[in-house]
Length: 82
Image 1 (cartoon, rainbow, N blue to C red):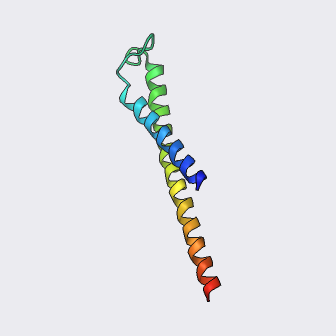
Image 2 (image 1 turned 60 degrees about the vertical axis):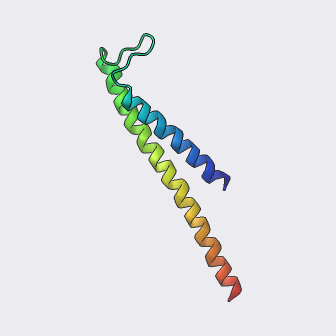
Image 3 (image 1 turned 90 degrees about the vertical axis):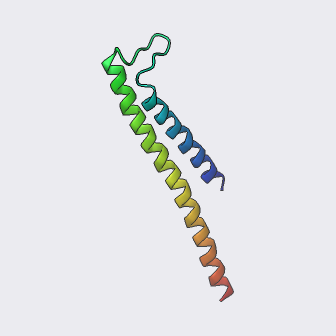
């Protein structure tokens, strides 16, 4: 149960950071100006996409793990009651 919660939380944080990187491609921060520096802009795009994919996969794995656990509990309950 705790693993599912932590995986979901990790997935949400990673997906949020990925979306943040992708939506802030044209906004400067302190000394960083992605609109002027092509390598920084490319890095933001790559890391944004990767973090978004990692976040979605982490959320799916947390839900899938929970479903497998629930299925095993139901199957074991039916075996013991028969």
